[in-house]
Image (tube, rainbow, N blue to C red; front, side, top):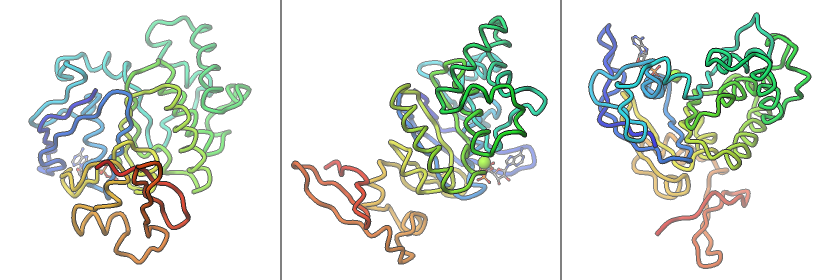
Length: 272
Ligand SMILES: Nc1ncnc2c1ncn2[C@@H]1O[C@H](COP(=O)(O)OP(=O)(O)OP(=O)(O)O)[C@@H](O)[C@H]1O
Ligand SMILES: [Mg+2]
């Protein structure tokens, strides 16, 4: 479990990135933080692994205040996937994935064997391990980023717009892959995106942010779609744009109310 308890962040130059933010991310669930550029998503995500310290308030992992945990140990225990992959250009793909384990004291051959397993796990041919990042496609690089974050087997995975740099088809493939992985692994995932469709697809819960990290609405995708909190959320999820793809219907199926989009795809169950 990750818990943000009334955190704020004002950067040194006076920019107030996060007003006051509280949220609990239950273990083994995926929570998607979605908001426009500058709404404080990255700032919030980085508070979890102490790459940003809150100006006030605290972040807890289970019962531990992260402020009391050694930052290096903390960062090694948490998977972090960056938007641009953040791969080391002069190391092979395999060594990129093996790096954290080697830093943690695992002998190189064992770390490499583990890394090869991780590549397979994220759907990459382990033979690609001998290449350098620049010799991979954008989508393959993103998968390597995910493999690297998962290699030390962390409980928590922080993902900051990890699929932002790839085309829509590959993006969808990567989302599907993440859903599959998450069914197998059951990590606690904080996923940042500015793409509302991605947030709805991946998040068990979605948190819509306004400027300054203020929560506009938080809930299961189907609940947000069925009853947006206000005009801001309605606009953000595109319900006021005449986007017919988002015209929803609800039907009773086996005694449950299920929301479907116009194409008949089930979006979720409305909890009553
Ligand atoms: N190191 C910094 N110093 C000063 N201001 C910063 C710093 N980092 C971020 N900010 C500011 O804090 C606000 C929130 O930034 P943040 O990076 O958290 O937003 P974001 O939601 O991740 O945006 P994006 O979608 O563009 O990545 C912005 O106004 C940004 O300019
Ligand atoms: Mg960001």
